[in-house]
Image 1 (cartoon, rainbow, N blue to C red):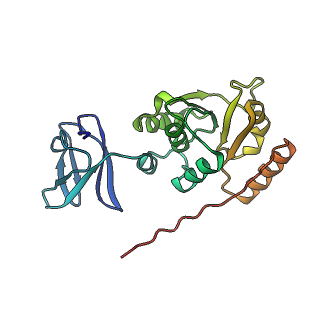
Image 2: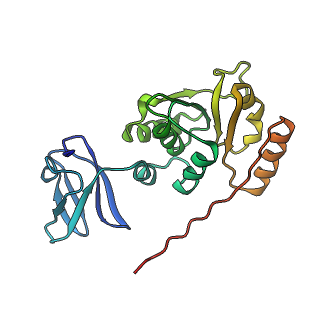
Image 3: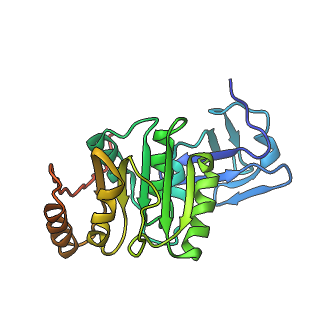
Length: 233
């Protein structure tokens, strides 16, 4: 069984609303309303085991999933949430070994998820123009252990004369004006390649849909995803 060691990321799980993603450091302590836990007490324990705080509360030590990394990552911009990530993967046929381009890195939630799917044989090249947000995204991607499958570029593809990549399986666009890079996306795609764009407003969606038609894309699918949590007793 996998045992926890110094430097591992561990999800300290108390309940659905109280859980903390922490990197284990031998001399660190974790303080919360349910008590204090010494990190050293987690070292050597198996993932899935539990610790007791000084207030006699149980905390489970879980191996973080990509969902945990996405939900707990630092935000520089609005992130793409798991309810959308799952549909994107299913609708596009995202799989290991694919070559992906992302235009608009943001906080790196979508980057991290895609990298986890296309790894270990695939790769994602992500482009952004904001160094501040790229620095945040880099930390998030590194924390999730996905850095080796991601190459970050500080470049504006809207003004690029020559596309940096070709024959890619998918282009993902997360910009305020996604329609502005549809021609560039088409140039980079292989035959039957896929474009995914995130549109928070209806006006954006209308302009994007028009750009898809103008650039001769087919199978255009516009969806909204709503998730409802149910408390089962």
